[in-house]
Structures are given as C-alpha cells and as structure tokens.
Image (cartoon, rainbow, N blue to C red; front, side, top):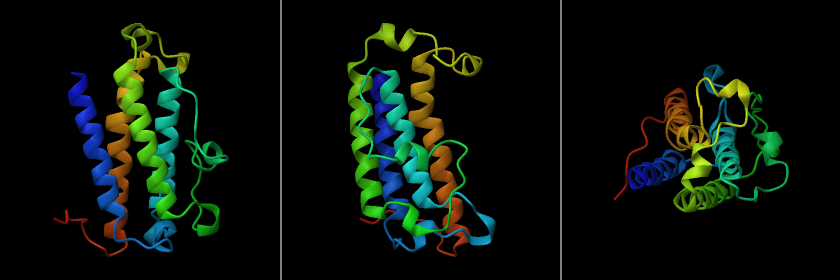
Length: 164
C-alpha cells in the first residue's frame, strides 16, 4: 500500500508544477472574480501541511521562518505579492517537503502511524496519525490543487496541459 500512496504523492508534485509552470510571480497572487486562495498561498499552505505531517512522524521542521503563520489553515490570502515568496522559492520548498515527507513515511514505524491523532477534536475524522498523514498527502493536497485549477479558469488561462 505504501508504494501506492507514494506514487500518488509524486504525481501530485508533478501536477503542482504543471499548474503554475506558465505563471509569473505577479499572477501567483491574483484573486480574480473573488477567488481568494491564489496559487502562492495554496503552494505555501501545502508545504506547511507537509511539514506538519512530517512533525507527526517525528521529523524536525525545516520550513523557512514565518511560513507557518503566512500559510496557516484559516488564514486569509492577500493579493499583495510582497507578502509571499516567489514562485521559484515556493516550488523549491514544496519539492523539499515532498521529499522529506515521502522519506519520513517510508521510514515510519507502524506503531507511530497507529498512534491516536494528537488533536482530540480531529480524531473523529482521523483516528490515527497515519490516517491524518495520508489525508494530507492525498485528499488535502488534491483539494488545493483543484482550487488552483479553478483559479486558472477564473484567470482565463484554461487548463494546464502536460508539456512533453
């Protein structure tokens, strides 16, 4: 099962790169037609989520300073591009987080994954650390990538197609 999860996680990173490959730094923070979650916020948020999942697996955090606050769940993205890292840095950090989390999951002791989720309120949906980590790597990530795909349409950019 692990290789299937890691395969999907790798695919997600490829989709991430494809969704923003043709965007300028100026476009990364645009909020067309009231679409609030722009690509800069979404990519940073996914990097923070991966860092959080890694910490649940016992890894130390290696996010750039301030990212946890800038990209926190419930935060309201600003259209001010000066508040966000540029596209290249966002892609670099999310790729690092993907590699770190994939290795952390590969190395994880099954007992760690079976531990109860540390947040009692979240246990109804994610009873164990493993449940939550897998959710963050798959469904949560694809949810935000879908938001970027919808954002592209709102920007009039159309679908991001795979370039060969």
